[in-house]
Image (spheres, chains in turn yellow, brown):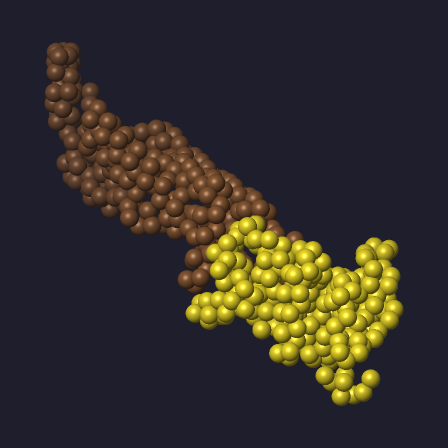
Length: 232
Length: 292
């Protein structure tokens, strides 16, 4: 790897290991992820894809090794700085993780309110993002009244509303039909084209065919293969 | 801050049952503790009125000259704590006794010699009306060689003061217990609320919300519940007090027992205390919950 490339890395992982008791979920993961990368992490169930993503936003702490995200060393980080780290990410969870008691608008606005934005700006940005994902007319609805595809679109809106540097998506098309999946993929592509780093954990073969994307295959907690898809 | 208030109000609306339980608990605790305090305050007022009438009777040795009596008066009034010493001759004392025993005064007429001694009625300064000061004043008076005996109901006053001290100690203990119990109950009610919203709090953390952002609406909610509970508790006590005094003062001499409610300052202090209890309950449960 050249010096210029490592300087461009937004995430660096050095010999990262994650253990749950005696079971090793991730072993010796060393990986650089660059600004505006489009990275897929794939592998069979239990390979460690979700664990790897969770380590990045400190949903879990690593057992060994070091992770640096946009200049923040996670192994030495004070607990109080975790919210600041998480605001660097827009996270799309496999199970959406929308707050059931809050409306679509409130779920999306929460990210901006938590980062201290003024109400006028919150209103403007949340409305604009909900329009972009085609959910403006359902903004007063509660998540329970939405379909899976609609909930995922709200989750995407929530992930992008704070203009994060990195999008983390855990199986974003896992439980969606083909039409809803392609809508979500289009949103992720548009975020990438605006300069955002996109990291997707998936085993959706159609999604993995995206041109120019880097694909990392995990097997039994280790990086097994890495390749870059050919230019489409 | 407006946003936090809006979130606190929304949280209260979304959790009406738990909020109702908390407010009712605070209202009942404030009602019981404040009722006790009110009873104690009024009893203290009555005692203060009674204590104003505490006097000492100083009986003199027989056959003192007028100069000796005058000298005794000066000596009595020079003792710290004594406000005034009024001379009551044995003739005057007999007249008073006769007028008090209207129907049996004939019995006194049959006496050949007036058996009553000359005396001074000693009234005391307010500061000297507690048990230990009374005793030291009595001892100073008894040391005068013209004085035969001092009478002021020492045992009665000592027992009475002991009772008052016990009463005030019990008041503080019960007040403290109620305070702790209320904080404990509020802390647990809020913990229930936190557990019912555990997933929501977790999601808020995942999207980058700080602990402060999560906690402030809970604190505001706790303080609002404390304020509401206290207002209800004090309101019920006030109307209860009005109805009880209306019945009570009709049947009892109103000069002897003048009952009064808390002053506005005390009401404000109780109100602030209620808010503090709500806040403290939140602090206890949030500190534990956020560590988990």
